[in-house]
Length: 166
Image 1 (cartoon, rainbow, N blue to C red):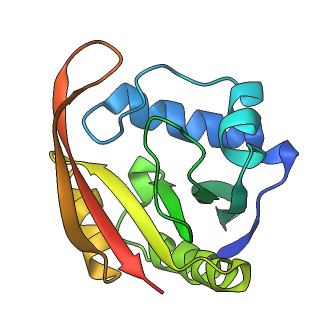
Image 2 (cartoon, rainbow, N blue to C red):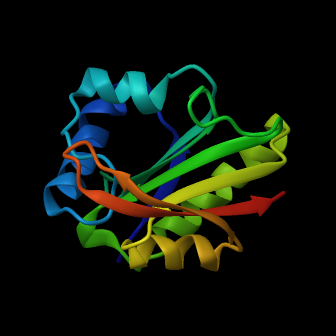
């Protein structure tokens, strides 16, 4: 039986979050991240960056099985309107299709509403079929595309941008 609980991330989750993300990076094809993260980098990038709204972790049978970040857009090269936040979701490769993403979203959505988020942007690699399906299933709608945006290794990959109005 699978028992998953959702809770806010804490600094001590960084090593397990980094391992999870690094396994996704190693598998390739679904995340724009290409360089593995250390626990300290995970804390800086996802757990406690400037503008964080919420970071939720999923714990399944005692193991970290996913996490979801929501934050205000702070990248000056990709400005967004006031009230918009960005989302990033990661579920362990061997834990897909078990409802973990849905449970993470439920907690993240509550946090978004409480923080006054009006619109959430999910920018997804266009070749990430699972990610596109996940966000589409939550009600996110396509609103634009960024063609041939290079990954850190220079590989051009189109990004699909989806939004959800709260």
